[in-house]
Length: 391
Ligand code: NDP
Ligand code: MG
Image (tube, rainbow, N blue to C red):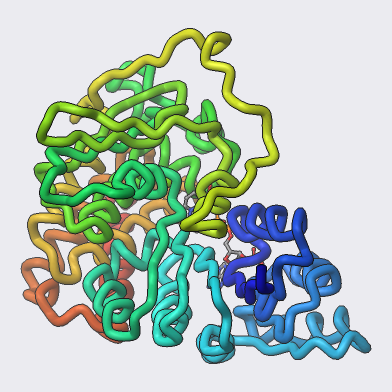
């Protein structure tokens, strides 16, 4: 077939590196156009030398000199800063991976959609903070968004050939995180080190803590509502400690289609990369006879208050997702700095949501500027509440 032009935003991260791993297995099939990173210039430069993109961008202007020095004599264009990231997203490509972490991924993602291309979306914050804007931009420019978050890839795969009208429920699974078996009254004493170990997935510290608190699942519930247009009451969370079923879709006739797969993000990335065809995952196939059993339990409300907050956000709509995400990021910063307790994170987010709802700013139009503004206000509110807690 023809060579596929690929751009990767957030190439130096966990998702970005897994994407490059897949590309590197069949380099003749791809032409890399853009690679972007942040502070990890050594990784970015190594990948650039290997994959020979047209342009390499670091998010940080003060890293540009290092990047240029590392790529001297290669002829690869170097750039830096938020505007350069957005400009790079306008370079023609057939498939663009959105794997920057945080709300910083939104602007490049929107610009990529304006090409009318295919956006593989790992950056869940884009959908949580600006779902309607993202979908409307894709519609207007005839672009395709393919989900990369494993649960959403699973739902997407279960829905192939189906209509949403026939769907009765969407169930996303959660491992339950580090504290799924702890007594609930002990959670306030959970340490940073304890919250930073995940039973099944090998991920970064922030998303691992978000798994223990279920804030990650809360984001994913909102992501499900936004991406699939599912009403909140149709979306369920199921604790599944083995993390082998990633999601289930229930239909009106009683059928439940479960997506079962190894806990390896290269499956969901590869599905988006090869869509609508299927490629080959370079890992051992699951041996269900060896695994023998899959178990499930309902998430307890008292253990996982983040799930109730996600329901509140979905009912409120507007910019409440931007507030939820911004406040959650700051709550996590404070927990990682060991300024607040594990259980304070949910209180911080709830407090920020209440404060900004009182100020009547939640129902402003969902634009890039308003998302940024509300993200900022939510972080300030979370900081104030954190200060109240510790003093
Ligand atoms: P990482 O933290 O591993 O990587 C993030 C990437 O974004 C890196 O390339 C980083 O650069 C870059 N980056 C960091 N800050 C900025 C910024 N302000 N502006 C531009 N670029 C920046 O994250 P993950 O790969 O784990 O996750 C990426 C996205 O995918 C997130 O939205 C996450 O929620 C989602 N996701 C991740 C999963 C996983 O298994 N990891 C699963 C499902 C979804 P550098 O490192 O060079 O500083
Ligand atoms: Mg996920």
